[in-house]
Length: 95
Image (cartoon, rainbow, N blue to C red):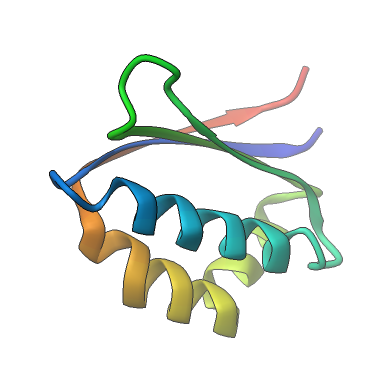
């Protein structure tokens, strides 16, 4: 079973393009992690302030390694989160 995280975020007004840039950079770096099986940022076609990120990891330990990584701390915690009006996380396991 893989460990899955779905993140739904809403950017602050005027921060849409910067958030997309950071999400793309974060995805690229995250895909190189040994335990990362998928990292897919998406933007709502009708609401550019709405971003969804689908993340899939080998297991929960790989997800925790992702959270501790330099690129996550720098790009997510240090940049992306500051551009958000709201953020909601839901965890799943593949079946």
